[in-house]
Length: 295
Image (cartoon, rainbow, N blue to C red; front, side, top):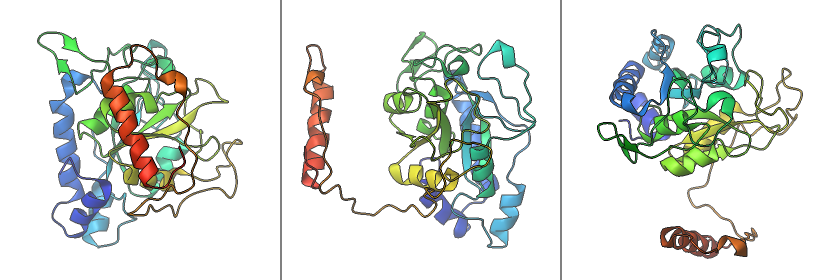
């Protein structure tokens, strides 16, 4: 169940193969299993699944996200839930309001499974600078020997939550790579939306003019589903743009990049680049070429 995409999970909820409570409990068990990775700071004591459970029983879900557990980086405010930014300064901070993106996901039925670990105030790229201790990459983490890889940051906990199946998707934030960096290190999809497309209200800032709520997901399709739910003008954030929401965003089964110009910087082919990296670049470049892109 935990390896499913959001669409696959929703299909099982619709057929009553499992319930929102079943899904939530499975995620909680997985959070406990991966606790040595230190991906989560706070996990709510009370589940948010009751309303979703009742909607699915009536066959009246709010949409594809209804009952889907989502992890939230601990720099997004949630009313009544501790929001620390992984800092001693905010260790016991209880926000009086909820971030717009979290509210929008809840309005679509998503369930907050927990708040994830991060570099303090989002200022870091390793996932290691938190008062709650470092987050460990699930691809190599051996607690007994102390040998582990960094997950990347600053949204390291969110990336680990998705990579391990503890959440079906997660919110991160991205100023200079804080969503995309851990996504690449943990093997998940990371999306930094265009500035102004998604509200920053309730995101505790690192740099107001550059911060953007980010999405971490198992696949591009899942990232698109979350972006559709989160995007749009917000009167509480003057930097959001009217008329540019993507609420009806759906991806084709056969994507086309015909005519899209893609540049590959020559200086990236430098001394010391691993053969694995170069092979991956060639594979992706060949794929884009076959799909019609201009390289």
